[in-house]
Amino acid sequence: MALAHAPEYLTYRDYLNLDDGIRYELIDGVLYNMAAPSLRHQDLAGRLYKWLSDFLEGKSCKAYIAPVDVRLNADKFDDVVVQPDILVLCDKDKIDPKGKSIIGPPDLIIEILSPSSGYVDKVLKHKKYQDAGVREYWIVDPTHETVDVYLPLDGKYYPRSYGGDNIIPVQVLEGLDIHLEKLFIE
Image 1 (tube, rainbow, N blue to C red):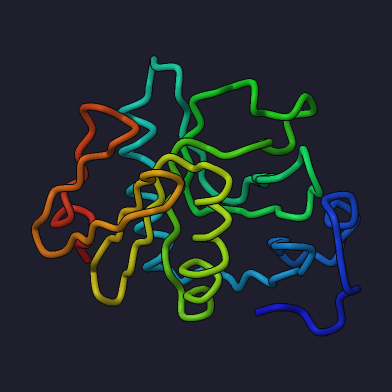
Image 2: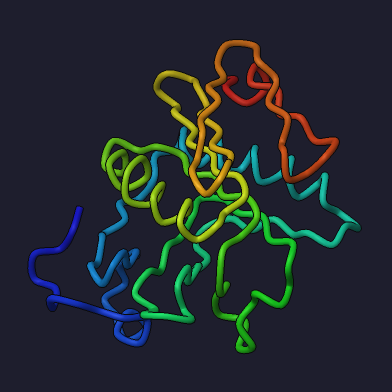
């Protein structure tokens, strides 16, 4: 949800000066408050992060779990700062020199839906990730126990939906498959 009391247009510099203890994302200069995730959300994020991290051990790519600032357009307006639930970065040159953020698109982003994040994840961030060139974007829906995987083709994302006992091949990490029956266990 966008904040009504925030100034009209913010950049990363303004974002860094926020010190109220609340987590925000900045999309096109507008602040969005990030509510605390549910325990179910945290379980799913932790499980996915562990699988990715274990798979990447000893490899050049690295998995990160929120909160990590990702500046998708730092080379232009620097008015988009998101904190994906999970991301994989294969280009270490995208880590800012101070080690505080990632500059540019990660290779894989995974967002886990919360009741308050649906519009932001499915519409706003989806477009930003597509435009920035994120190579693979997942939206995990804990309520319906589904995963929508978006892969680019000619600059546009095309979805593949998975549910039940499907196995998802991670396209940007050849050899890694995610078994949904193991992800959505209680």
